[in-house]
Image (cartoon, rainbow, N blue to C red; front, side, top):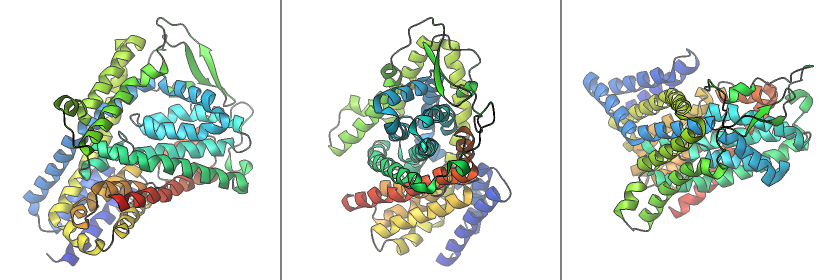
Length: 478
């Protein structure tokens, strides 16, 4: 088949996936599989070859990242029910003061809390951020909402074990240790600079509280939809081991309420120690690889699957001590329910990538994108950005863009980690009305749709553009 025919059929498949998701509200899982099947049949793989390629692609990516996603989400579910996030935000408030909290909270979320499923992390952190907002003055809501949006979305694609980051690393065959290190080099300056830029713009007259914040009723502020029970959506029994419970008052403030306890609440450092150990082990593996030093024990423990398993076991042990075994089992069951869709979407992203590879698209695109080092990265960013604007999902657009471009990486002479990071950056562009995060931020932070477009859509888009700065800088050295 000619190069032109392959390009046209690939474009048709991608457009069809977008139309099925956006126009006909078809589940993304089904739409991606249908697009992969069409492309296989249209490019001459045949019925049997198409099915085999789709199945093999799904299996390959699951073998690469399936356990990692599951372990990360399960760890996050236990940490959520331990109340670790509320306590961490409280520590940040005391350590940094109100003015430093937006940067501190966003950087903590984007670098350290990505094992927690995004919607759950948002439901936990937004009421706390809303309670802090009045202490920041007139623009408190705008600053905290922007910090949450940028921190949450950037973490998904840049930080291990964020689900988007795991999928990108798996599809482009980047070691997780390497992705972790380079992702941090990109995400930390990106989040810090983006929040600073947005704070400057919002506080120079662009944010209008009377138009951008929902008016509160006589008893309950608009947007205060996250009742205290929503912070622990899967807990069926009260946590009687906690020394204090963070709650959101009717006015949006944060207060603490003493509760009965049967065991001493462990320190915050102990709660997060297993997660920190897991990330440290993964990073150690990357460092030893770069240093060309090997040790069988270190090699085994720093394997991402083993490292995250150690983190999960350690978190469960602490959870059992604090909450009891039944509560830990309930947390794990909740985590398994959350991880199912993530695993399936990542798997079908692998299916699409496998079909694109088998169709020979990599060689074709390589001819057009290999003229310079920086130009292909901008094309990667643009493809992911267009997909995100059309589909409205950061994870789906990142996975689809990575799957489309994975076969191209060898012919470009680029380090695959750069392509993965550029796809992640592009997938952040213009979080808008089709995103669940958009509406959660609107309601939980008490914003109008106009206000959420400023803090979430524009804020994350600024981060998307800024991220290309460190990525292009890294391309000079890799």
